[in-house]
Length: 336
Figure: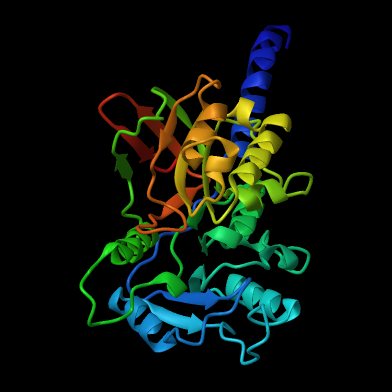
């Protein structure tokens, strides 16, 4: 027995390390296959009346998928949300719980996803994982899924698809095609052009983030972004004043998020207001004031967010970030 003691002492920390690794591992939902069913739901705003849901259905059918719609178009013209909180939550939960549904796609953003968090059981996705898809306000759900260690897709939503058959293919079609590839597991690398504000280096960590306003609104809540494990942050924004972007970056810095990051990827910062008054030439120049002092690789110009094209990204995925003077690329790592 005495001879076994050194062996037991050696095995104990190894077992603890293995358990710790298991606790950090993220669940990856199965990729879609032709014939699968997706549910299109509205966690937040309603679809505009001009959106033709039949054409949305046709687009997914062209991908070989079946579509199930929730209540996405509120008949009340004065209503902000697609339906009352209870209805939106029930439809999201039904899509999560239905074993025949393989992906749950938000029809659009707006505002309202956070109101559903007390009403839904997202932890059910740990037992029966499926892709949750969306961006903008849907960042709330992505943050909640990160806490549950479940991968999700930050990507374009049907309200932004190019649906007019007479139109020539354009950048918006690239957005939809990017979503298709992500759903079917065909996204492996994104290569980017050189940007003057890029910061060179290499890093590896799990991709997290989304809309900057929503990320900062989650500070102090159970969904607050934690960066105590290797994290690469992605941010995008639309229609914000420069001083508000500065205030949000101050928030991320003061709560420790920025200083714990392994890398940063900056997407579209669309229609930023008041740069001249704030003394910066662009939102990227403002962000550079914070990112350049961190000593980590930073990539600007990722085509993702509130502009075209809006490329789909796997959040929660272990990624490799490489930045040098010739190129920048994001590699999505294979399953662990």
